[in-house]
Image (cartoon, rainbow, N blue to C red; front, side, top):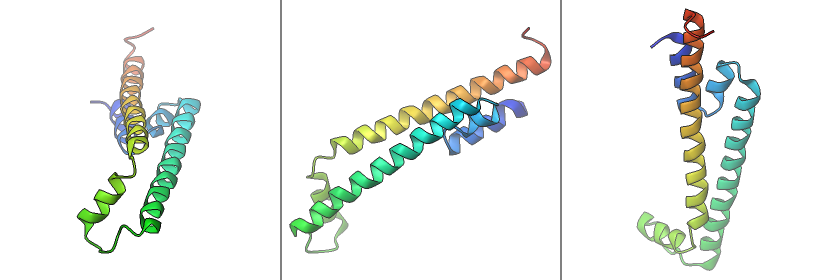
Length: 114
């Protein structure tokens, strides 16, 4: 695997959008980075709200992780799963797009594509 393919692929595996920036698709990379940031903030705020609701309800009387998780899961975590799914879809798209963009750059460098 050539440098133009490997570098964006590895970068996209770590941070979605970074592979696009390395492939010189700045706008696409910045849009993906923005989506990742927004999803992270929304996920964190929503998780904080769920944990706060569980703590305020007084349902947690022990520090046993099983009890804490049961109370958190009882708060309807469907939105958390939706946010997680959106993050996974964005990450997978970012990795595939970075790989294909790097492969195209390799072919252009070799003179295979016009």
